[in-house]
Length: 461
Image (cartoon, rainbow, N blue to C red; front, top):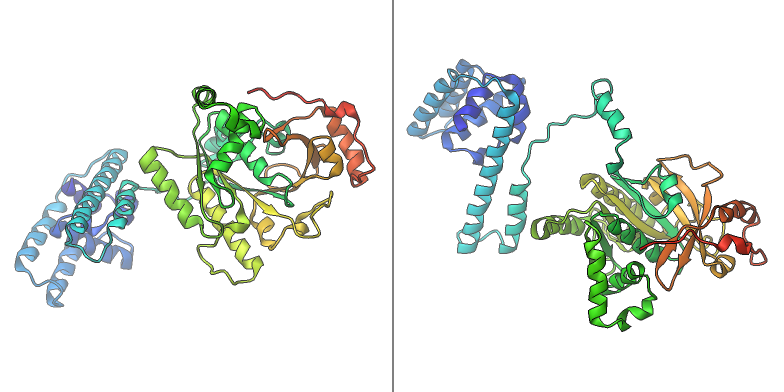
């Protein structure tokens, strides 16, 4: 395969430009490695693939400069150069690139395994044993990504197909959340729910996680506030449709029977991982995602981070002003969503002015206005005495890159909330019609929402 690669490197410029960035010295023996360095030296300086005479001259220059002292290596590399320029090139470019990628992947894995053996046997004392999993993961992930962007004219067909591709959206069981996202939450997005203490931010994230899991999606829930068991208990109450206080009293056999029934009804998986508050950043999350893929063959399409203000930044030390620090965390989380092609949901607190305010806006974001500047979508979760009495929560759109935020039907709307079962649900249209008038009056405690508005659409498990 080495002869095929080098014979085509110097005769097929399109192939060379596609694969050269991915070829590494340690994939080859000493002669091919030296020839690769010669090709890269000339290509990087002159942007051309060297002809035979130029390659030979560069090899001779290495001898004259004292950088190549082995006559044996010189002679064998000289023979390799001559043979490569008389090698029959391969016409099928796609086959050639695929085979080259496979070769590089195999060599990377081989090198990682041999390097791991050196570490274990003590021949490599500079690298800790704990580095072995990362070495193997990096080798497994070797691939050629030759995308250079989206061509407006040439890629129009693929672009149009994507417009109607529902697989790249994540619909949930709350109808108006699907409507304001034009069919479901998009991938590669940072979605932020904002609310004051006790408004149900974690309940909201748990419900979305449960909804997506039931619909057959893989979901990763990262908690920096509550333990894995507490988050799981909330999701148990949601999915089992029982009061959270009753979960522990079901009896183990009945509990396992109900959970297994839910497990069999969905092709999705849900993983919950907690970290101590203010200790974890995207570097930890990225490592977790690699471990989950390697150890459990688990690749999420949605990630819940509960919540952004108690993450840390992987780039900045705490002590910077809050605007810069929280904005950095938001940028890192959004980058993670793009890198792993997921929708990343998180939450944030309102500031003091926003607490108890029924007309929250972006200026009520706690700590940093840099967060809404970075988020793709942001909405407020609003509760007060009136809404509590009606078992309802108001959602107000604050920023939305995916739909019209000024639509009066969906700018502000209601959803039902059952705190004892950790559930959200749809309310009838009458409630949405009433909310406009009541919201205009700021939903003061003297207001009352008609009893007819409390009828729900039902929530099937």
